[in-house]
Length: 251
Ligand SMILES: NC(=O)c1ccc[n+]([C@@H]2O[C@H](COP(=O)([O-])OP(=O)(O)OC[C@H]3O[C@@H](n4cnc5c(N)ncnc54)[C@H](OP(=O)(O)O)[C@@H]3O)[C@@H](O)[C@H]2O)c1
Image 1 (cartoon, rainbow, N blue to C red):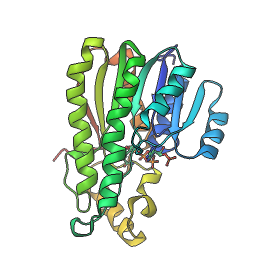
Image 2: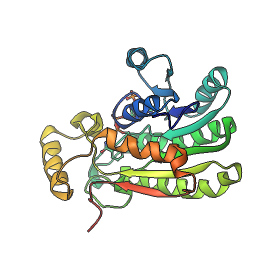
Image 3: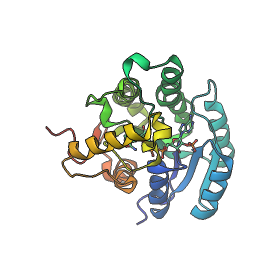
C-alpha cells in the first residue's frame, strides 16, 4: 500500500481491461490517476466508481494532432506527472492476403504513432525521476497467423521503449516495456479482433495449449508488473522489458 503516494499517473486506454486494472492498482497505492478512453458515458461511470482521485478524459489516440488535447487536460488539472502507462491499443487480426490499408492505418496510428506523440506531448510535464511504461505484446516476439500488422506495431513499440530510454534518462525518466501474453480482456472478442466466433474459439484453444500455465492471464497480473515499473522498486531498471506470458515464449 501507498507505493505511489502523491504520484500522478496517466493511463491511456484506462477504460477497460489491463488499463482499468492498472488504474485500480495505482489508486489503491495512493496515486491520482487519469484514465482515457473514447466513450464519455463509460468514463463518467468508471470515475464515479473509482473515487475522487480518478479523472477521466475522452481522447482518441489515433487522431492526428490529438496529443495536445491530452496535454491541455494535464496542464489544466495537474502541476506535474510522475507516471505514464502507454496502454491504449487495438488488435485487429486478418490473414496477410486479406489485410486492408484501413486496418493497417488504424493499428499503426493507435499503437505506434499515437503512443509516440502521447509521450512527446507529456514528457514536458514530468518531474525528474518519472516512469514511462509501454504496453507491447508477446506478439512482438512470437509469430502467429493473422497477427502480422498487430505484431509489427508492438515490435515498433518495444524498440521505441529501448530507444526513448536513452534520450529521456537525461531527465531521469525511466522508460520500460511490458510484453503481455494472452490476457482475458474485451480485446479477445470476435468483434474487437475482427474475426468470426468460430475463429475466436479456435484461436483461444490454440492459445491455451501454447501457454505452459494453461490459461489466459488476468488483467490484474499485468497491473502488478506495471506497479513495479511505476514505483521506486524499479529505480535502477531502465530500457527493460518484462515478458508476462505464462511461459508462452519460453520454448
Ligand atoms: N489482452 C491481451 O491479450 C493483450 C496482450 C498483449 C498486449 N495487450 C495490449 O494491452 C493493451 C490494452 O488492451 P486490453 O487487452 O486491456 O484491451 P481492451 O480491454 O480492449 O482495452 C483497450 C483500451 O484501449 C483503448 N483504446 C483503443 N483504441 C483507442 C484509441 N484509438 N484511442 C484511445 N484509446 C483507445 C480502449 O478504450 P475505448 O475502447 O473505451 O475507447 C480501452 O481502454 C493494448 O495495447 C493491447 O495491445 C493486450
